Image 1 (cartoon, rainbow, N blue to C red):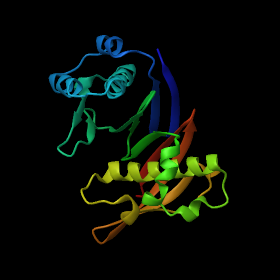
Image 2 (spheres, helix red, strand yellow):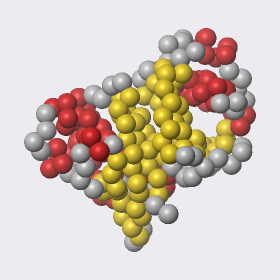
Image 3 (cartoon, rainbow, N blue to C red):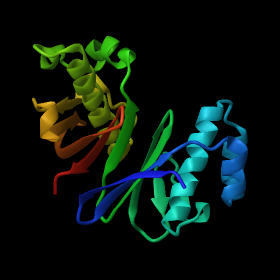
Image 4 (cartoon, rainbow, N blue to C red):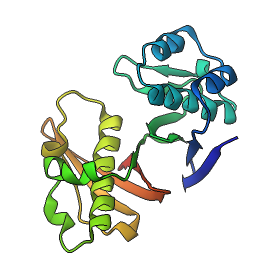
Length: 209
């Protein structure tokens, strides 16, 4: 069973990581899917997406949930039948779910050159000054994850990563920072925690209470 890692983010929030070694057929045989999920799975052209989708269901089963406990609202945001908050992400060889008593959003990204190349499109590149190439890649990936995680929480059309979501200056070794969403004439503040998992960056965002 490739449950790879568990991160206890706080007393009521835990993230679970599945290292995907199985093929689509093996994963499909190991889970029970409702009709809407079967329809979604059949519509996925990428085997990587299919494996990521099914690995999320493996994680749910590991936690004594099933696909029937997971629903999506009209905006595509996931919900659990017991009222707990859930956020989902998958990237290449990993799927991740985070379950919490409080609202949060997560993102999991593999470290890759492309993120650094497109960094000027979504962040202030001055945050990358005086860093090695690897450090720049790590920090840029954290920033992308911050913006993705906040977007998942809000899930509103029109939110722009570079124009509306701003992270405070941070060091990669801090494993935490603050961020703000400036949107619809309001400013919302978020607490961010981030971790390196193998050659991936995992980010979890919480709205400030």
